[in-house]
Structures are given as structure tokens and as C-alpha cells.
Length: 196
Ligand SMILES: *[C@@H]1O[C@H](CO)[C@@H](O)[C@H](O)[C@H]1NC(C)=O
Ligand SMILES: *[C@@H]1O[C@H](CO)[C@@H](O)[C@H](O)[C@H]1NC(C)=O
Ligand SMILES: *[C@@H]1O[C@H](CO)[C@@H](O)[C@H](O)[C@H]1NC(C)=O
Image (cartoon, rainbow, N blue to C red; front, side, top):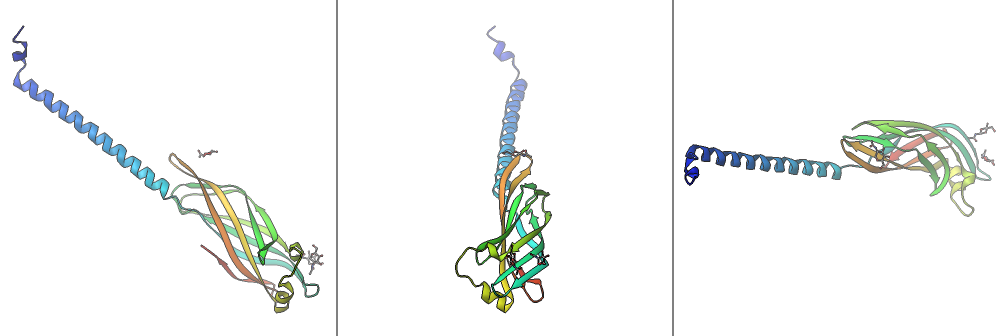
């Protein structure tokens, strides 16, 4: 009985040691892989960017104006683009685009929901009625602007939605902020610029 120990050959002991060493190596490797995956995940989640929202065009379908009392009504046709700069799939909810004159809302339109695949752009077309009699009471520059024939308008919207990529499901919101000039004489929209 006492020499049971001595019966284990040096070769078997060596194998046992080698087995332990390789098991240890497998655990280390697994730990390293999990660490890398967590790091990659964190980087991807942290790097989710807001969608880029713009008006690609705005055209005048109809315009009536009067210099006294100063007033204008116009029907515009436009398109909003939602560019998804991320790799994942972006699904956005219905939003509202507002048109403002001197900071006050003169028209708005409810837009449909949509989706944009990774690195792709979604397009939403819409029409909007803009009426100056929606301006609040009080002094404004409308008489001047209609006289000069250049009416500065801005268009804004907030688009919210969810970005999904593998197990990532994150709420992502983008803002639109555009300015343009309604040229009364030619019944056109000029100088459309959207801030990034
Ligand atoms: C614009 O529409 C309003 C009614 O919504 C009307 O009272 C006004 O006279 C119109 N202005 C012009 C220039 O047609
Ligand atoms: C402009 O006036 C015409 C005729 O009165 C009317 O049919 C049209 O709807 C008006 N346009 C707007 C944008 O109010
Ligand atoms: C993402 O999460 C929201 C709720 O937080 C859920 O309504 C939606 O279905 C999820 N999307 C996916 C693709 O799992």
C-alpha cells in the first residue's frame, strides 16, 4: 500500500502537469476573448451617433400675399431625409416638422414613421400649409419682408427612434434645423441650408 505513490510513474505525473497547464491556458484565453467582446460592445454602444436630419428640397406649390394688411399664405412641398450614420438598423417614429417665421410657428406637418438601414438614408416627403395669420399678436417684420419680397423661414423637427444592432437596442434622437428664404416675386424657395 505504501508504495502506491511510487507506482505513479514520472511520465504520468508529467502528463498531469501538462494537462493542468493547458486547462489554465484555455481559461485565460476564454477570459481574454470575453474581455475583448465586452470592449468591442462598449465601443460600439458608446459610438452610436445621432441621425443627420435635413430638408433635401422645399418647393412652392401655391403662394398668395398681400402687402397691406401684410399677410402671406403658401403651400410647400418638401422632403426630409434621415441619414443613419451607424451600422445598425434605425427605426424612427412619426415626427412633426414645424415652419417658423421670426421664431414663431406658422405651419406644421405630421410626418410618417420610417426606417434606415446601416449607413443609409430614408426619405419622407410631405406638404405643409404656412399661414402668416398664425403669428402671435404684436409687432413683427412682416410688412417689411413682404415689401422687400424676401421672407426668411426656418424648418425644424426632432426625430426619435431606436437603433438595433445584434443585442444593442438604443434610443437615438436627431434634430433638424434649416433656414430658407421665400422669394415672393418668383414664388420660389432659395438658399435652403440645414445645420449639421
Ligand atoms: C391667408 O389666409 C387667411 C385665412 O386663413 C386669410 O384671412 C388671408 O386673407 C389670406 N391671405 C392672403 C394674402 O391671401
Ligand atoms: C390662394 O388663393 C387662391 C384663390 O383665392 C386659393 O385657391 C388658394 O388656395 C390660396 N392659396 C393658399 C396657399 O392659401
Ligand atoms: C427595442 O426596445 C423597445 C423597448 O425598449 C421595444 O419596443 C422594441 O421592440 C425593441 N426592438 C427590437 C428590435 O428588439
